[in-house]
Image 1: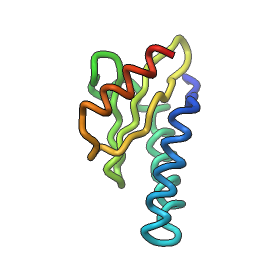
Image 2: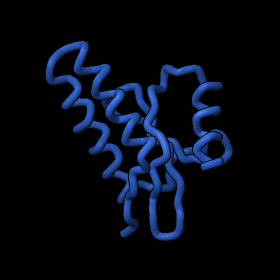
Image 3: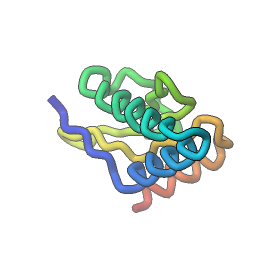
Length: 103
């Protein structure tokens, strides 16, 4: 089984999502995190079946929120590079992911 590694930038994305939803109603932020971590854990079974976006990243669409998980395979690891709101302008998503490749 491949190991899943959530990179720091993706962790920050999850925290930003938590903050956004928690401001909407108390408890929704926790539900958001639970849902997204569940989606990420599903990669143990389904990694690689998701379409490739922006040339390099597989994109997993969350089942419960309009968010996407962008990941790549690195040897025996599945690396999560970003967890972004799917309603963002695709150009800003592309720029963000391209900056992840440079680091």
